[in-house]
Image (cartoon, rainbow, N blue to C red; front, side, top):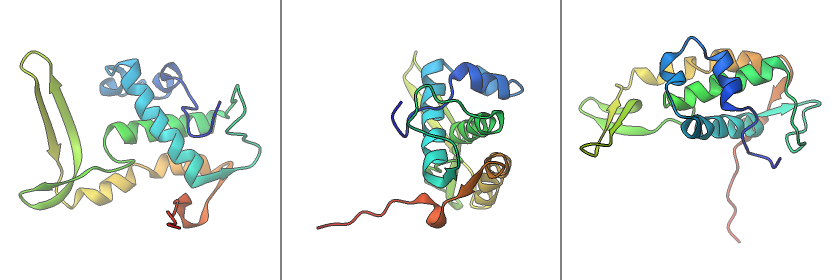
Length: 148
């Protein structure tokens, strides 16, 4: 397994997110995309003693697997890597997306600016789970581009 790849399966995420029917209704490929984003978040924001992200098969503790599931849910809701957009009241986060195949419709519903704090609140639980075995990287694990 390479770094920055999904660290849990959709079936594992479904166990932790069984009370979220909108998550359960997603197709496995869509879930895998959100799990991959959650996995990148975990691997770039946290240093976990004894967790070899590049070991195959990767065995995570229940706490870390659950954190990945909840980060995946945050990704699905647009709160892990927010997609800012313009609304009548200013900039907001994407809170709902819908697609339709028959008439090829697509739409996004944006929150108002007050919802930005709600987005970070969604990460409190998975962050607490990660803190049981890991240390948040200083600088948030951000990567800086350097031009030669």
